[in-house]
Image 1 (spheres, rainbow, N blue to C red):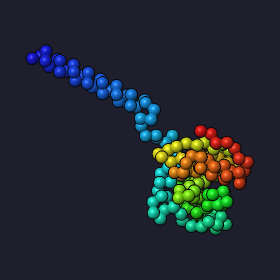
Image 2 (cartoon, rainbow, N blue to C red):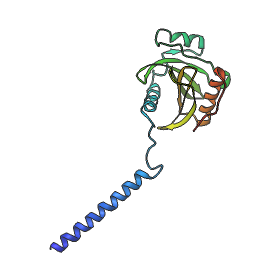
Image 3 (tube, rainbow, N blue to C red):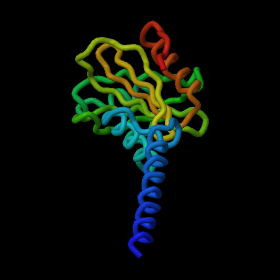
Length: 182
């Protein structure tokens, strides 16, 4: 009887060892888990974008006129965000709203590409300019950079190349364009 119990214990231990090996392989195999955002700020940006897609949350001011959207932010944020109409480039301005990221109020400027909204989050940056960095997070394409004293994050479900074109058009209209890093 003791021999049978030892055999059962050995089989159980072997089973647990095999399960542990498969679990470890699952954790270290690329593509086996859902892609996680790289940092807390990126998680905040994704969450704010998702909340904006709920009915009635996309804009606080609905206007395709940059001269209506830009002044709307006066007194609501402590800076004057750059608002550019990219309708001729295929990215019409939809409006704007207030949001809260990185511990402070930010401007969310909303564009559209086809049926897809693009959120452009903008707030003051005390750091040097950086080139755009393109990432994917939770099924969304995200590009972030710093330019001319602003921190900017563009996020949408559009194809990567479309969002990169949006950022290039935006940068070209306000400053010299640069390449997007991946």
